[in-house]
Length: 388
Image 1: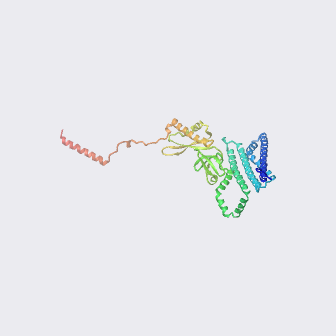
Image 2 (image 1 turned 60 degrees about the vertical axis):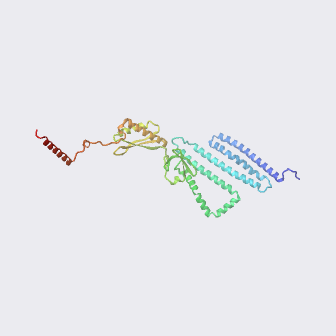
Image 3 (image 1 turned 45 degrees about the horizontal axis):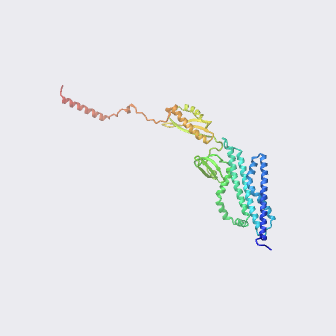
């Protein structure tokens, strides 16, 4: 006999099951906090930054994993007359557990990559090793995270019987569909494979100075399918990863960051080249931009108007090189203006000689005609005047 307002047998079982699930979640939360506190103390005592970072980054996903595992462990002991209630709950808990485990794996991989890169500094002059490790770790970390996500989604989908049956059917008739999917996913897989190749061969690295399609810039980010290049005017150039394997480009920091630059200028033929060549080290020595390795001055061309000179200078990196070239050009101009003003570029006009300066001569016939006319006028004048 049941009284009005009293729950039925099924409702009572559901309430009891919900209570047990709540107890399991609470127990899992307490276990997570206790174990997390112990692991935090152990990592702090060990003095290892890797252990501390792993414990810190995996505590959040573990806050879901441990209670879900407790729920999965408690489900077999719960009896409910509602059809498919336990299986649906177990299915949902299993899906959430898979997602939390994937989250923890990605967090652990990210922490490991950050700690590996943190051992080498990027803000030093010789940061080649840091850029190599940073590039390799960054690309492999992104590719591994994508593989984990895809694999986890695949496992979660395969837990549904309907999708598993559809997958079996698709595999049985995967001819044209497989070709279509392969063609559609070709750019993605090309860039993923290119990312793996770039991670190991490293034609480009993070913070490399490159010239891509006539754009000068630095490698700012390397993602799983594309590269972001910061152009000198702070624009961003986004290039697919596969482009760097199929096209030629300039890498100014492939081995070292040291570079040699050119300064071209013109001067008059009267320039004392040896005096200028002796002055170049003094000009470069006035700035710390010059690394003191390369300096040279040569006449590279001579025309009927002026001579062309090239000054070679070297710097520690591309940014210093640009400023050093400007500094050297300004110093050379000041030297020519103050020390050899006669050597400044000028335009010569050929002077006229004495013959060219005299008025043009009359030709012989005109001269004789003028002389004869003068004689006739003289005779006529004498006749008119008469004797005496």
